[in-house]
Image 1 (tube, rainbow, N blue to C red):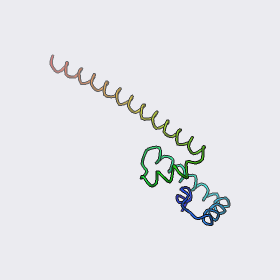
Image 2 (cartoon, one colour):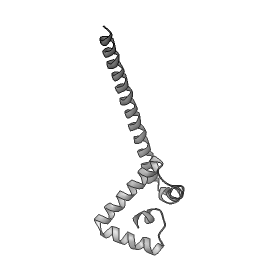
Image 3 (spheres, rainbow, N blue to C red):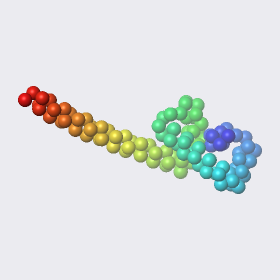
Length: 108
């Protein structure tokens, strides 16, 4: 229900009822924030279906704050991927050097 709310799929009455509930219930509000984060991460990773992407872009991402959060998550994911690539290259280089040393030693 929270996901449908965030994607604008609830009637106005259902939206108002959920809003009244989450303003009164801290746990429900926390759950709403977690679902929001999950949607942003899935969108940033490109892990949403075409119809879900349309709903996200048409309704959920109307908020400038949410668009900024998506851009932040995308930038963070790109940065982390570059770190992983650097570590992989360093590891491969180190492993190659070790194999070369072992090979030279074995030929003596």
